[in-house]
Length: 275
Ligand code: NAI
Ligand code: 15L
Image (cartoon, rainbow, N blue to C red; front, side, top):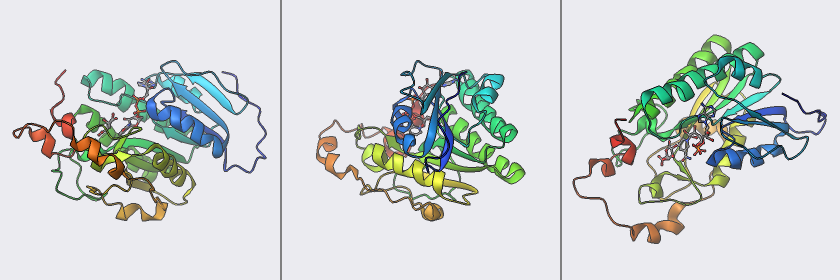
């Protein structure tokens, strides 16, 4: 691994940030957005990534299931934005390696290297088995809707444990649906714009004394299922709304009347698999 030699006198709040999942849909957005907050962004993934654009980037291939690899990956970083892992429902064994072991390795790396802040990409699917007409907040009991969601739920438990045991702070982002545009009727409620995502990650990195904060990552959509009252200290103030896509989404074919998944917050994830 070659490390960059950018000086730490730029006035940016971090010298080096580690970004996992950098080849993914959100990773590519955050690789760019994190440049504003750190002298050096260390981008990592198991999949191919664009090469480092200059001294302000480092690109390191790493499998999150490889503990020694993750410990090396996290050397000399000031905070971790952990987006890497399987992002949909899959066989348990795949989820186990990438998400459960992988996130454990991230926290072990934070402990060993004295890294004090993790931003963890959790998911709305940790509460996916609630009906769509119920409003939730961070104190609602989790109802994970698949193995993928169980791995995110475990990630949130790791965050709580590592805070109380070792003082490592985490903001767990229960991301709704972060895509360029909503893709269906459900996403009119769950959509998170890329710009609001970048703002949420910024607030999660810069807010002091977050302990373990759980926040739903969702834009200012009309019909919200989630209330962020317990994350008000982050100052997350989303600016986008899915409303401009409503007419188009309402033209799409409607789900069958007996499709239970269409009434649950987790949507199709509640019936995915088994694999
Ligand atoms: P994505 O699937 O596009 O990106 C995930 C990245 O993780 C991929 O580039 C993949 O190569 C990498 N990865 C998978 N297994 C790995 C391993 N064993 N070692 C290292 N890297 C590995 O997903 P996306 O949409 O960018 O999501 C990013 C994160 O946010 C994920 O953790 C996902 O679960 C979470 N999230 C995303 C939502 C969304 O709407 N995009 C909603 C809720 C959560
Ligand atoms: C997620 O957790 C997935 O990573 C993403 O691909 C979307 O499907 C999203 O949830 C969603 O609920 O729409």
